[in-house]
Image 1 (cartoon, rainbow, N blue to C red):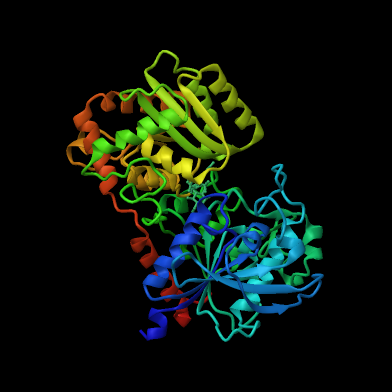
Image 2: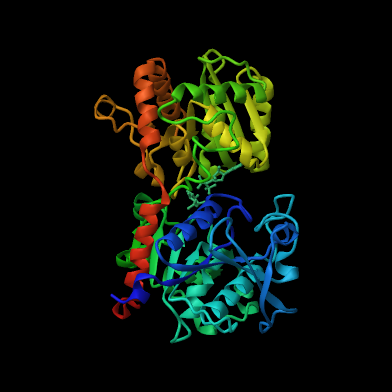
Length: 493
Ligand code: ADP
Ligand code: GLC
C-alpha cells in the first residue's frame, strides 16, 4: 500500500460542527472525528456553511476564494479557520442570503423550517463538489470525500457526473431526516436532468436529497451496527429499506466515539467537582450542587434521574411524561434539559409546576447544564423509539451515571443490561427495556432503583461504566479502513 493510501487527504462535509454550531450529535461527531483522523495521519479539511453565528463570533477567519454558481445570485466565498486547538482546517462556505441569518442551521428562531432549505443546501453541495475537484484552485484535491446526512447528500450524485471525481462515503446519522422537496424544486435547482428517476433522486414523485447519498456514494455507513440492520427493515426503513438492502454489501455500521477532552469527569471545568472511578464519593458533590441549582430538595440518598434531549417523538419523551405521572409516592427526583416540539415543552413545564419537589424542567439549550446533569444524576434515561447511535448514553457512562435505555439502535450496541450474570462478570453497564411502553420503562427504572439501594453492587456498575472505552480512536481507525478500501480502484462502483 502506498503512503498516499495510508494517509488519505479527506474532505469532511457536514452541516454542523461543535463548537462552531450545534443542534445535536452530528455536531459532536463532526467536531471530534476529523481531529481523531488527523491524529491517525489523514490530512483533513472540514467543510461547513458560514452561518451568521459563526461570522459574528470572534473566530479569526481567512479568505480563501470566491466564485459564482450558475443560477445563484451573488458571490459565494470560501473562508477558513481551525477546529479548536487542532491543526484541522475548517472551510466555511459563505453566501450572505443563504447562510448569514439568525436561527439555527435548519429553522428560524420560532422553530419554523427555513422555506429555502433545498436551495441553501444544494448551494452548499455544489461548492463542496467544486472543492472536491479543486475547481476553486486551492491546490488541494481530496482522495476521499466524506458526506454526512441529507444536507450534503447531493454531493455523491453530482460527483458521479465527473470521471475524475474522488470516491465518496455517505454517513447516515438519522434516516428520519431525508430532505424531501417537491419536483418543482428539483427543476429549480438546475440539477442534471438524468438524476430525476427512481434510480436517482426521485422518491415517489418527490426530490429526495438523501437518495443522492444512498444511491451514488461508493460506500454507505451509519453510526451503529444495529442501526445498519434496522434501516434495512420495513419498520425503520421509511420506504428506503429496499435500496439499503440492495446496497448491503457496501453498507456498514461504525459506532460513534466521544471526545474525551470535552467529556471527562476528571478534568471537566463545567462541573462542581471533578472525580474519577477511584474517587466516586466526590460524584455526590455534583448531585447536591445540581439539586441546589435546580431548587430540588438537596437529599443525598434520593434516586435522581436525569435527561438531556431534543424534545421530539424519536426520543420517546412521551413515555417519560407518562412515567412522571406515577412518581408522587416514590423517593425519586427527575430533571430534564431540552428543547424541541412546543407541545412537549409545555407538557414538561406543566408537569414540573404540578410536582416541583420532585421534578425540575429547564427548557433551553445549555451546554454547561448538560455536563452538570451528566455528572450529578444517578441514572440517565433514554427511552428512544429509534436511536441511530446516541451520544448521551456514552457521556453518561463516562460520568458514572447509569443509563436506562430502550433496546434499539446504538443503545443496543453500547449498553449491557444488568442481570445476575452480567453483574457477576463485571460487564453490566445499564438497564435495558425491550418495549417502547411506559410499563417497560417503569420496570427498568424500578430495577435500577432496587440495585441503587445496594450501594456495593451499584458502585460496581458505575465503575464498569466509567472504565468502558468509547473514545474515538477505535472508530476513527474503522473510518480510515473504509477510506482505504474506497481508494482501491476495484472498489469504485
Ligand atoms: P441527537 O443528535 O439525536 O439529538 P445524540 O445523543 O447523538 O442525539 O446527541 C445529542 C447531543 O446534543 C449531545 O451532545 C447532548 O448533550 C446535546 N443536547 C441535546 N439537547 C441539549 C440541550 N437542550 N442543551 C444542551 N445540549 C443538548
Ligand atoms: C443523529 C442521531 C443520534 C446520533 C447522532 C450522531 O442525530 O439521532 O443517534 O448519535 O446523529 O451520529
